[in-house]
Amino acid sequence: MQFSDLQLNKPILKAITESNYQNPTQVQVKTIPLVLEKRDIIVSAQTGTGKTAAFALPILQQLFDKQDASKKGKKIRALVVCPTRELALQINNNFKTYGKYTNLRTTVVYGGASIDPQKEILRKGVDILIATPGRLLDLHKQDVVNLGFVETLVLDEADMMLDMGFIDDIKKIERLCPVNKQTLLFSATIPFKVRQLAESSLNNPVKVEVSPTSSAAKNVDQALYYVPKPNKIELCLHLLRNEIKGTILIFRRTKYGVDKLEKTLLKNNYYCVSIHGDKTQVTREESLQKFKNKEVDILIATDVAARGIDISNLDAVINFDIPNIPESYVHRIGRTGRAGELGKAYSFCSADEKTYIATIQKLINTEIFVIEDHPYPLDPKAKPEVHKKKGSKYKKGRKSESSKKKKKRWY
Ligand code: AMP
Picture 1 (cartoon, protein in one colour):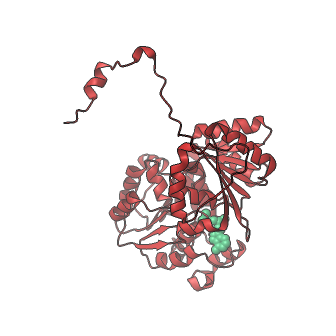
Picture 2 (cartoon, protein in one colour):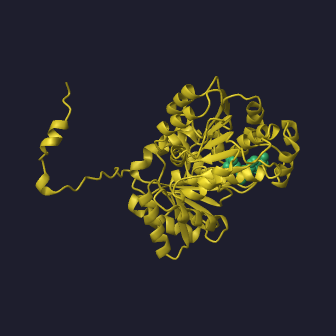
Picture 3 (cartoon, rainbow, N blue to C red):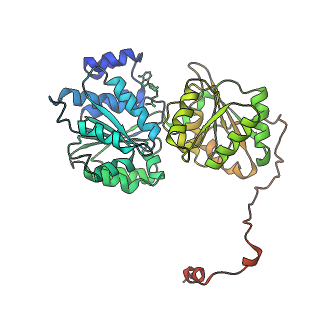
């Protein structure tokens, strides 16, 4: 299958050729014709599959085919909603690249940045708007955004938007768009709440599935280290000194964990950067840019911060903490591996994370190779650490009157 078989217009094909894309990816082959047929779709595809182009190209095509003559009266005809600012910026860049030879106008709005310049651009009129939910609703409240002409609504990384608590915002946005719009839902995973959203918001959708997650892990050389939790940092330093080289993405489950590891690595003279939700927009963008430009070799991130961001072709991924959602493991390690070469993934598992490994192995249908020969082995009989809350000794056994009242009886 070639791009020219997908019935795309010349200006779009020209931009694709300039991007050096040889052939459409699997998700593009499956999705583009359906979007052009105006169907609603649910696509389960993860980052790196080319999913952005899978919706951007046919949207550009449709809007290009029936363009508004005047620039002044431009109305938002395509709306892409996604969970994070970084992802919004990235999608905007993709639309700009693919729409280079059309005169369609695209812009992006997201929170954490000054609202006035965003208002200014919107007032001038755009065809395509990429937005994070909160800022979009803010702008709508201020009467700068009219969603009454939206023909295609894209919900990107839907599972993550729901995880982040955006469900009400998404439903509100959906209702602000015309009833007969086309809706395209993209999600790395399709858990129950995404299915529920699809049922309430989509019209007879076609389901598209791209490379089941279990097969994605087959191109990665995976190593598992059982290690006591307090020794994970030593193991990490040991591997960085002796084995893991090149560009490395380290995942931690919490923002606190990311900060702590960053401090330790910096103290040990490893130049690294980090991204997570509590960092400012500017810092996150700077860090990502440094990593992408190869000014730094190590990026530390939470799953949420790294989701959807186009960082691939890494030399190694380290799962400093084992993810509690098995799909996250597959997404994380899918970012490693340069063209034609096996990627490398290192996972550090402490006693309390063993159950996560079991569910991951079930999902990928493979037993991850265990490295026993390392300086910080975990005693196989080690029990998970239980963290007891250190409350005040004076409060022991005493409850406030209000908490007693709140207590639910079994009956
Ligand atoms: P995405 O899954 O949308 O984040 O895309 C991942 C990467 O694949 C991006 O860097 C795209 O530029 C690239 N890409 C998208 N479509 C193609 C294609 N047909 N051929 C080669 N690269 C592509």
